Amino acid sequence: GAGVSQSPSNKVTEKGKDVELRCDPISGHTALYWYRQSLGQGLEFLIYFQGNSAPDKSGLPSDRFSAERTGGSVSTLTIQRTQQEDSAVYLCASSLDGGQRGYTFGSGTRLTVV
Amino acid sequence: GENVEQHPSTLSVQEGDSAVIKCTYSDSASNYFPWYKQELGKRPQLIIDIRSNVGEKKDQRIAVTLNKTAKHFSLHITETQPEDSAVYFCAASASGANNLFFGTGTRLTVIP
Image (cartoon, rainbow over all chains, first blue to last red):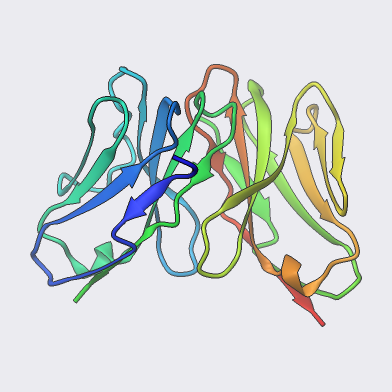
């Protein structure tokens, strides 16, 4: 596609429920990244996928967070048993060739846990 | 791993003045340094980048300088305008690395 697409753009969920966030990267981009941005804060790295390599999950804050990337394209970030501190904007980015080409970010999913 | 520090965290300037944001990095292998601009409620967008084989790059009112010896790079915005108000992030990446390491951001406010 023309850009990185994320859905939903907004999600309100009750504490304890599971949520799935979707990212559709730019066609042909081999690298895909998930970041979390709390209100007024910086970019917190969560996970990245590069081609067929095993993902780097070093930024995932707890085992309630997981992500998949199917067929080297679309990715889903799943948060189980959501808690209020999970409320944030979740940004996805893709890159043609890892960190040396810069990222294109999606518009993000604003998650609110009530 | 790489550690990128960014200063200041907030910066206010009068319209027409210049703004400078500074970043330092720790990994001498880093050789790619992009800058992102994030307007309120929007996605971060790449505005300029520099590679370690050059010391300065300019694009209209925006310039980036790199001092490899000091492991320091800066963003310079001249003749600032209200639409320059945003959060700016610096980042660094080493050759062969798969990800960028971001600074903590600078909130720039241009006062009309």
